[in-house]
Image 1 (spheres, rainbow, N blue to C red):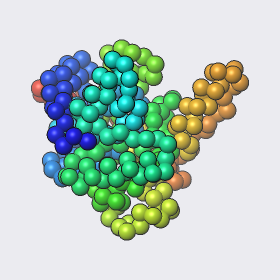
Image 2 (spheres, one colour):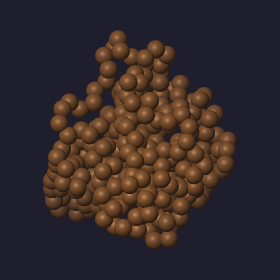
Image 3 (cartoon, one colour):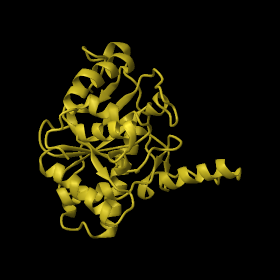
Length: 276
């Protein structure tokens, strides 16, 4: 990862922020939970490709994400431009084949955090195929335990309507971001190799995301659900239903109202983003 990604701030300040703020008027709650300095992990649900633009746009500090390794080694003009962009904004390549490749991605994330930066991750591993919240993969727990950094749960709201899977141009919809209070896992220090601890931490993070987003929870991996859907479309065989459950780790589903945009008069001045 480039130490000072040369394209990140120009793209954020000159393109992303003005465009996203003017067109989509994002509303934000809980931005005060993001520390002004020092490491933190932003662990978010993932509803749309737009999430990776929206979250860095509303957070004042630079956020480093992981991205598919294929994006860094494309061929042809489009592939080379994409690879240049990924390097230029300082994203981390991750090989999804598992094993040593996964360990290398975790090491890279820990390095970012030890440099005192913000690291963004989608614990579900891929976009939700149907708007529900799926079982978290344990990378977020391994990174948190190895780095000691706090985890900030994040809920993206409405982005599945902004840029649904397969759509090239986004719809004009108002979207939101809710940032929760930091989760401290220092009580598990030195237990990063304990599988029960790693799963427990992951489920706690997912439960915190669900408490913010009020999504239905599915105790299955999103990638497997997506592959079943693709197989069903390709073969014509009806896809088996994956039922929702309460919450991660057998928790009860959150109660109360899901997050909604603020009233018109409650928007913060200068861009229409409420920060509380």
